[in-house]
Amino acid sequence: MMKQIITHFTDDDLYKFTMCCAVIDNFPRAQVKYSFTDRDDTVYPDGFDALVMQQIVMLENVVITDQEIDFLKRSCPYIPHWFYTYLKGFRFDRRWVKVEQDEDGHLHVEFEGSWSDTILLEVKVLAIISELYYRVTQQVEQVDLDLYYQKTYAKAQRLLAAGCTYSDFGTRRRISQEVEDVVVRAMKDCHQSQQWPGSFVGTSNIYLAMKYGLKPVGTLAHEFVCAIGGMYGPQMANHIAMESWRNTYRGALGTYLYDSYGWDIFSLNFSEDFANQFKGLRVDSGDNYEQLHKIVEKYKSLGVDPRTKQVIFSNALDTDSAIAIQNYAKDYCLPSFGIGTHFTNDYEGLKPMNIVIKLVAVKITESWNFYNDTCKLSEDKGKYTGKPEVVERFLAALHLHQ
Image (cartoon, rainbow, N blue to C red; front, side):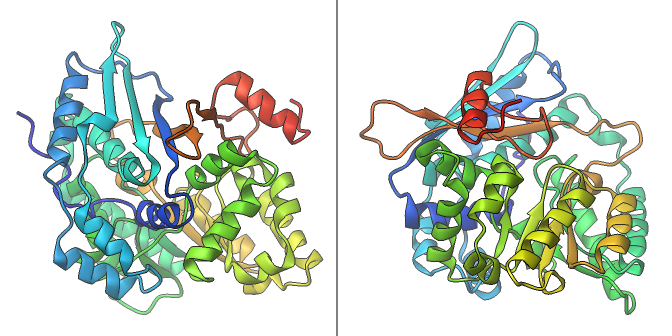
């Protein structure tokens, strides 16, 4: 029996919790399907599917504690208190999940159920698959945690000296829970060692934020916009997503991830009231510099000074690219950075996993007898996720023919 990987309910990204709350508030009856993709077509060891399922069964005994709720109440005042009553009664259920391995050793994972339930599986299951893979292949043992601490501390020194405001987004593809723990500790230690031009603002991992007295950070993911696109179509998906978010959070948590269906349709949906209400935008695909200029021009066209707006860069960054963007972007906006795999899966001889779990189908209520497929288009041409015919249909709806 492999040791239990996820032992704390909040060993998860904050944005899964903030989205879960917004889902219950705005789409309480929505049903969804999710699907796992391994972009590297990894061949997993024999019996790996059974080990993943074992870990998912173990999740059934992971419940939120009063200590975790108290921490969330203190550090996330924008979350309405009714949500904690929901979390107190929340239980994971193996029946939401299907895990199989084909004869070639490729892994297939699917979730299906109520959106408000299954939304809390994605990050935990990705973290389980990632850590399990390194454990079963005995690569975890190669990692020298002291060395990892030093390496991370050196990254922090460079980022802070360059004036970067940044956070750890690395839970989903980490080598192990211990590695992310070391990363967050090193980042905090470095930040507190002296006065820096930059700032380490926290981690997306709620449990580690609680453990190290940091701020949990995060707003929303593509999943929120993509599900709405599946229910209502891509033309109005951003508008409805921003309205729903505003309905739940009243202007708090105002960083919007705009690239689910590309810049052009988002730009048409981004009116002056949204530009004023949201604190900023997150760049997660396309060329960082091109995207920055599109954002700056859009704000100017709405009479908003872009230098008062936050732009969060989170597109596969490393220390070098973050520093380069910081030096360039600081004259145009308030740049900040969410860095993931480069922090929690960067060790000589270990290949980071390239795995995702995407929401692929949705229906607005359980009483419907069919699902609508959804997809993600992003600003990276060809890095579209979803069935080819669905992608084609959405591109046509947005007049974006390939």
